[in-house]
Image (cartoon, rainbow, N blue to C red):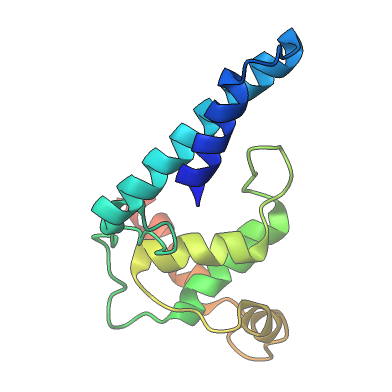
Length: 147
């Protein structure tokens, strides 16, 4: 179909009837665009794996894994606190969303955090051991600083 279009465009361009200068440049541009699209189709047929944009490129896995004694909920204590304080910023200067934090921490520790908003709500509404993981981190820092 594009080949037929190209032939028609060239035929119009080469007709003995004088074409206005602005039309001639438009015809040349249309022919160039058609040639480009023909090359793209040819590349897509020749190299389907390279030209397949539908596949989502997977991020490489992080080399860090969450230790067995810790859970994704422990990470959510950090994520909730950091996001709530506005620690992270986006490129446009706006505050990073909870989902962005969760995605980053999930990738970094190779874990899956299901329903981050529900997890955040559960952390903020705890009655017992409100900040168990943060207390562990704080205790470690105090212990190390006193040595």
